[in-house]
Amino acid sequence: MECNGDISFPPATLVELSRYGIRGFTDYFVTMEIGYNLNILMEATGGTGDCKEAGCLADVHKLCPQEQILEGGGGCNSTCQAFDYYCPYGIFCDWNEYNQLSESACPNSERHCAGANYTITFCPNTDAFSIIKLSRKLSSTDYLISYPGDFTLGFFGDNNRYLGIWYTNDVQWRKVWVANPNSSIISPNGTHALSIDPNSGNLIIDVGGKTLMSITDIQVGPNSNLTATLRFDGNFLLINEIDKSILWQSFDHPTNVLLPGMKLGSNIRTGRNWTLTSWLSNEIPDSGAFTLSWELVNGSSQGLMIRQRGKPYWTSGYLNVQAFQYIFALNRPNSQSQYDLSFIYNNEERFLLLDSYSDDSFPMWILTPKGQIIDRNNSSVWTPEFCYGYNLDDGCVDSGLPQCRIEGDEFSERNSEFFPDTTKREIVDNSSLSISDCFMKCWNDCKCVGFNSSTTNGTRCVFWIGSNRFLVNQHDSSIRLGNLFMYFCKVRG
Image 1 (cartoon, one colour):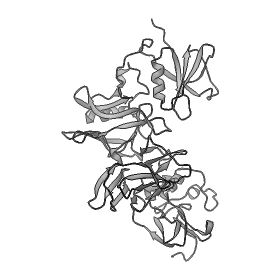
Image 2 (cartoon, rainbow, N blue to C red):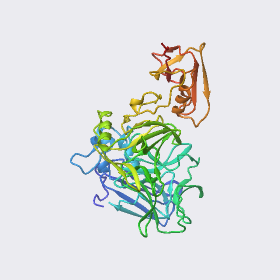
Image 3 (spheres, rainbow, N blue to C red):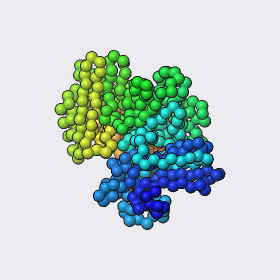
Image 4 (cartoon, rainbow, N blue to C red):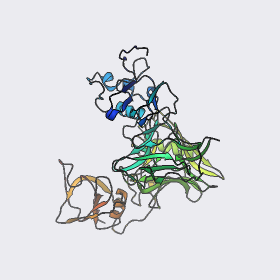
């Protein structure tokens, strides 16, 4: 209104309303194509079609890449403006951190509606995109955004779909929580949605209007005062608005990531355990081979324990707060992050709490498919790549050596090719096997000299049986399956 119809001077959040949409619909958009300066919410009422809210509600001033912040503050330049690219109007150039930020900060930006009245709100309530009410569904292409925009909740995946949470501005899109890790959604037409069941009060995923799965199991019965909220810390809550009681929260059901504020341990009174479970592979969220827990070690003291398929694999041993932080710092010499850790031990609860970080945009611990603990920089905390059963100084649990292995034996990763006349290849076509399962099977088979995943998604196994004579590949890194974990036998005596 102030501009009297003149084009805005970027960076500015852009609203478009077109009466020439498809099949008589009105198209409306809220985007960051020419940058961002303030939050905007656009709502349609009384129409038909996809008449949902559109807008940009995250605090982009906080999330804007440093090199794209408007000089003097007050806005976030687009890639084109910041780097003086030539970009035709309405087209993003050179996919980068800003483009992902735009998708996440304005997740529900494009709508198609007919016969509606429209309301545009400048600087709207911050919870407009972070809450699901009983009457609203989160479709397969919609997102929830926590305020001030640190976390995003939505569906992801191609043929197999999952509901997850991730840091909004993480260019790697690493998921910090997955609702259905072992029950992927197969919905080729993209008709699935997340909503609150008006009959039971549970969070459900439906496909074509039919309930596919229930995320929660609360059974409160019909209740019109329930909301589901994505909080600032990444915790997804189901709340009874009458008394503000929390009926369910994602922090009580962790997957492979520990966030600040999440507990790792157990509640003695209720029997609840807070345990991390690794993904099957880096691409597949199904439960993998490893779990990370905070439990009794050495009979009477608390410590970290990694188990592989239920068996002790690695342990930190007893650690008090000072020792834990000291060892952690030694193994991450280049990290600038500071950790505040709390250990709670009483008659009701016993857990480790990751309180806060400083100078870290995406604080988290990740339990990898190889059984390692890493942070957002992919630097190992202090867990080894593989535990061979004898390197106890690294925290590995003594599991005994196979008859044909000796201390010092291990696998190394090489671009190589075994001689086919002395070594044969065997494939185990089991999609539930991870790379760590392949390692253990090969390590315990005295005839096995090499292994790898037999698929590009990190599952199933291929083994090389026989002689470990091989030809090193010095040029082509894609020979056979690329990088092979190869075992070099040591001659006894």
